[in-house]
Image 1 (cartoon, helix red, strand yellow):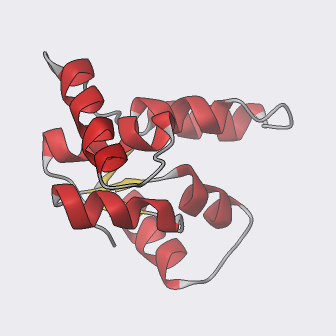
Image 2: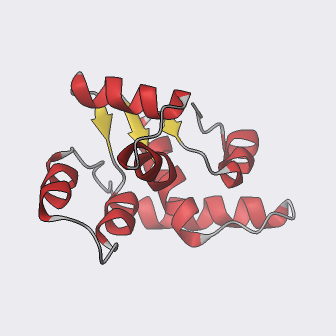
Length: 124
């Protein structure tokens, strides 16, 4: 199972053929793709989104927010800030979802490297 960030999902939608797009396509075909609630929100926020693509996005399983999630996410963000990083709140919430479910994150966003370095987030 892998969790796709909106950066990789958008590249996939645009027809990208880079490695992350290939991994996303494989995971989608095999029923191994999940999204974080924040990534779903980001993807559905596109005002040009077609109805067909919206239906595809909402059919992909979403990682469940587990008890204590918000507290853990706050602590995670504080950890990065303490180490002089400036993590975006949305990135923190995506990372925490993946950490809670022990699911690797497929992303093009280098901001997640800090979560990997300090919190053990698995990146693809």
